[in-house]
Image (cartoon, rainbow, N blue to C red; front, side, top):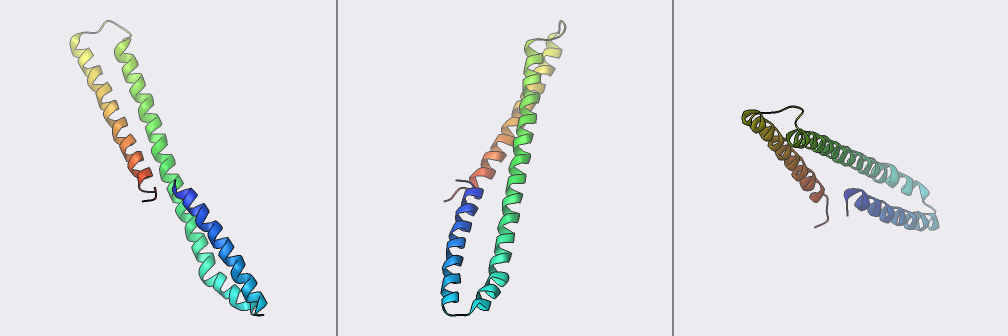
Length: 124
């Protein structure tokens, strides 16, 4: 379950609790108390949850896009290594092989960063 799902469930629980409080307060004829509670506690909490969700989505999107770009570069380097445009010598082949390995290593690092990021938002 990701952060967005957790936030969604928390907001649903909050809405239910708020509705129960509203009914209780209205039964006691003190609606101003509920409005003060909402503006002092609930509204800032909801705003913070929205900011957290937006930040986490942005970071994940950035990592996913970075992984896509790395993968694309890795495929291009591998294709160039397997299908050179011209006859290449061993030295040039080794350079291309190193380039492909560097792209693979970068992809691996980004993949691990994404996995670590996603794991940080899983319930423990």
